[in-house]
Each structure stands twice: as structure tokens, then as C-alpha cells.
Image (cartoon, rainbow, N blue to C red; front, side):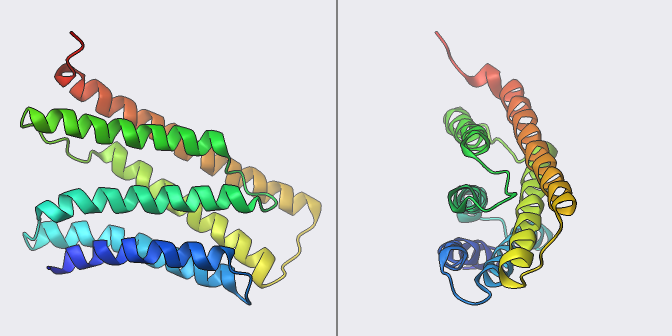
Length: 194
């Protein structure tokens, strides 16, 4: 197994550990969860670059890399919605929209693969993934400040941070919808409706 595939596999392995520490009420559990998520996100940036630079692209990588991204992001969003921490603007609507886009693109890839067409990751899809991961990192930093370091902000500061995080989450949702629409428009001709 080459290095990019090992990094992808590491990202998948880190997901349950991220979830464990997010929920496990031990000292500095949010800090540990943040570090794990940040490390997993970095492997996402590295594996593709290394694979392309050194011509190490494999079938496993093509399959597992986008799958690892989807699982990591959806697991983080689901857990953040579940813990229902104050000021965290992740809810079922956000998760449903993002999950629906991921299922749609995966289904599109299956349909086009039958016709010998590869749905490559586009710039909008990459932007959506990167922006969503950065948003999750910022939410985790906020939780880390509140829970692990007991940083107490006044009502105005908390409201401002909540507003910023809410805006970032909904920008992620908008990027998700745009990128999904671009994929659908670009490959709609391969969907047989007759």
C-alpha cells in the first residue's frame, strides 16, 4: 500500500477516535477531538497531492479518498448536532442537505461509471469540502475554549461568535448545493429517464 493510500486509511481510522473523544467527558477531551479532526483533515490535503505528484493514483485511492472525506465530515456534523452545545449552529437540516448532495454525487458516479465516464472532483467540490472542514475546525476550537479552558465570554461576544459560526455553516451548505448542482448539470445527459 502506497503512502497516499495509507494517509486515506489513517483518516478513516481516526474517525471513531475523533467521535470517542468528542463524547468522552475527560479533561481536555475537546482539545484531543480537535487535534484528531485537524490531523484527519490534513491527511485529506496531503494524500491527493502526493498521489498526483508522484503518480501514485490507484483504484483504492479513487474509491476510498472521497468516501473518507464524506464519512469524516458527516460524522463530525452529526456529532456536533447531537451534543447540542450552546452556540453550535449544526442541525438536522444542515446534515440532510449535505448528506443528500453526497448521495447524489455518489449515485451519479455509479451511473456514469457504467458508461465509462469518470466524474472527477471539480473545483467547487474541493472548495466545498475544504470550507466545511475549516468550519468544523473553528467550531471545535470554540468548544475547546468553552469546555476545556473555561473561557467565558460576555453575552455580546458569544452572540457574535455564534453568528459567525452560523454564517460559516450556511456558506458551507450553499457551497454544497452549488457544487451538487454543477455536478448534476455537467453529467445529467448520462441519466436515462426513459
